[in-house]
Image (cartoon, rainbow, N blue to C red):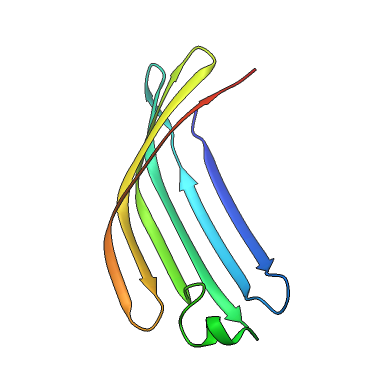
Length: 108
């Protein structure tokens, strides 16, 4: 059974903090047994900010893009997740690098 996620969001910081918009698309169909493998991609963009620190590049990034493969193994009520990928962040200049996210979750 395929699984997927589409998300669009907006966030606003307090006290004149940044307004951010974001989009995420992910899919992780079951490939064998309890193993799910797929892709996950996220884009977060600063829409505007009245905070002087943020405007000078010292606060939140103006753009953040993360994409990569995702693998999840379900074991009873537990889930084990790993997501290796690439991240790009722009503050004053665009920087890219590798990222690995992992996690453990349970259903109670």
